[in-house]
Length: 106
Image 1 (cartoon, rainbow, N blue to C red):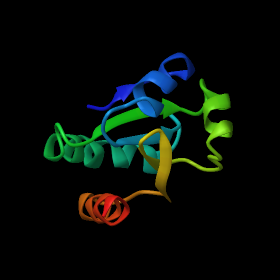
Image 2 (image 1 turned 180 degrees about the vertical axis):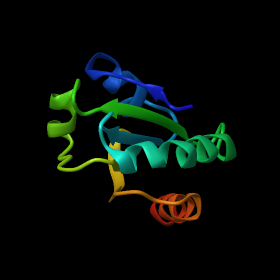
Image 3 (image 1 turned 90 degrees about the vertical axis):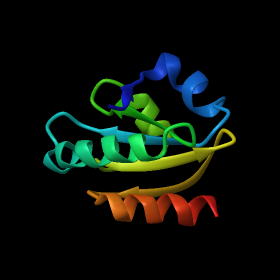
């Protein structure tokens, strides 16, 4: 399951990462966020070694969400080389997640 990170570890785990990182900006009270968790777990397993998946709770790390322009949960932001490469908002099935990642990193 994706590791939850906070403001203190965001720069190291996301902005300085050697490989692409998918950040799930979520809220514990968000139903679509909860439905997304199993999809992210499958994605993380399928893309192990190629992509890291981490989670940021927007209720506890509000400034990280604000700094990254997150306006809704769930928001998935794909970072590559320390910069945002793409984003998508709302629940996505595994196939949609894979298409988003492949299309963004192509």
